[in-house]
Each structure stands twice: as C-alpha cells, then as structure tokens.
Length: 332
Ligand SMILES: *Cc1c(COP(=O)(O)O)cnc(C)c1O
Image (cartoon, rainbow, N blue to C red; front, side):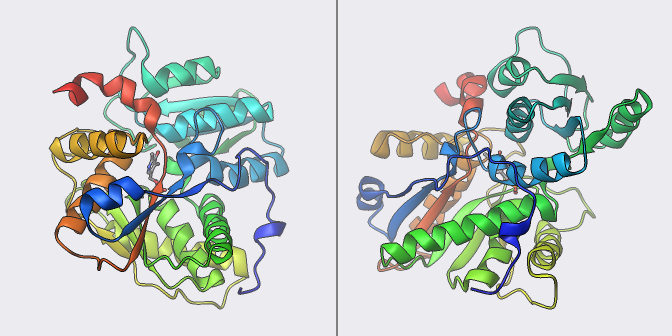
C-alpha cells in the first residue's frame, strides 16, 4: 500500500461499512459468461443508501471542520446525491438547501419526497440541473448571515472522491481475505467522482483490474469529455491523499455507448437489466444510473468482452428510491 493520508482527513461517520461483497451465482449461470460479483453500496445505510454517502463522510467532515452551519448542493429533481446530502445534514445537525433542476411538483415522489422528509429547503432551477445557480444561492445565504459549505454537483471534488479511494481500500481488504481476484469493476459514471476515487484508490492499493465507468449522461457538443474530467479529478484526489508526486496507474476507461435517449430516459436497456437482476437475484437497480450501467454490463458480456474465467464486479452505487418515481416507464 502506498503511504496515504486517508485516515487523517476530517471525516464524519455516516455509512454502514464495509458494504457487502456478494457473488451473483444465478445471474452468472444465466449469462454463461464471467463470474459476476456485486459490491452493495446501495446498502451504505444512510437515508436509503447509495454512493454519495461515502463521499459525504469526507465532505461533511470538512464542512464541520470549517464551522459551516448549512450544506448546499445541486442536482436533478430525482437526485440521489441531494437526498443523501439532506439525510447527512440532518444527522450532522446542519441545515440543508438543495438547488434542483425542474419545477415544483404537486406531490413529491421518490427522492424528492425524501428530501422533504429530511427537512431540506428546495430551490427550483428550471432547466439547469448541474448546479449552475449554486454559487448565487450560496451568496444569498451568506448575505443572510449563514455559513454555507458548498458541495459541488455529485459531490465530485477531491474531498468527495477520497471516499471512493477509501472504498477501493475496503474492497481489496475483502477480496484479499477471500483470495479473490477481480479482473474488472463496472459501475455508472456521471459526475466522475466515483471513478476518479477508484482510480486514485488503485494507485494506493496496487489494484490491477480494469475500472470501467459506464457513461450515463450525453455530453453537450464541445464539452470536456468525461474521461478527461475523471483523469484530472483522479490526479487531484491522488494529490490530496498522498501529498503529491505519484502518478495514476490506470488509463481512464469510460464507455459512452449506453446513453440511449439521454439522462433519466428509461429504454429497453434499463428495463431489461432491472427485471433480469430482480428476477435472478432479488436485487434492485435504479432506472437512471445502475439500471443503465447493468444494461451496459449485460451487453459487454453478450459481446464476449470478458473471458469466462474472469471475475467481474458490478459496483452497485444505489439510486433505488427513484424506482417509484419511474413506475410508468418500468411497466411498459
Ligand atoms: C451519483 C450517482 C452515480 C454517479 O456517480 P458519480 O460519482 O457522479 O460519477 C451513480 N449511481 C448513482 C445511483 C448515483 O446516484
């Protein structure tokens, strides 16, 4: 293990760790491909769980260290990140303000219902769902005498991504204890913090398997490619946790072939993946992120992109509260 400062970073405990690492026996047999495993970060425990809870342990730790009284962040109306931030704020005794894309709805569903239950204040930002107005809302809070800590879209800065470097340390402890070799990890990648953290974690743990992010969002014409954003965030995260002077060991592997009709639009890929995993394993994936990434994994397996003697881990990043808000799309 490369010497690192993960244990010295400010941290506020929120997650039930380690999350389970389980074999997917019935799904593997059904597909007749590689041996499949799942890392259950849908079971991180805070407010129905998900990957943002690992990031929030470090982000909330930093917020408290800076004397903040309010967490503020942004996302889509069905943002899992915002829901977990609202729950984390409640647990830490902080206020929470969310800037959500879209417009007010009469009856809040899915994650939005939970934001309300956790007591978050919601600001609607119309078509902008990636935090474009976050700074303006934060400035307003400062003007009213509050001390907000701004968490970027997806919690994806080096502090948040440290949570996933730490998650790879946790995974390698589990696999070492079982003498299990993981040849590839597959998961959804959107704001890039999960992938960046895993890449930084690979450097400190010496993890050799592939780290394949399934891109969830269509990027706008001319926007920085996700892989470039991930590379730079991974390098910064590595800097934060090692003090610098260490290089990444992996290329950034982002597969952008599974975006269908766009962010949050459920197609056959997601529907089939959700039902197959539910019916072979009794495990739920979500309509926006993990359903899409699992659909991508199923397609990669059908294309024989893995060998049958390989071990492939699906990293479940959560999101299942959104299932209920997508009932109509899942029943067709
Ligand atoms: C946010 C989210 C992701 C994407 O993680 P990033 O770190 O933003 O790339 C994947 N799955 C779920 C369920 C999420 O909520």
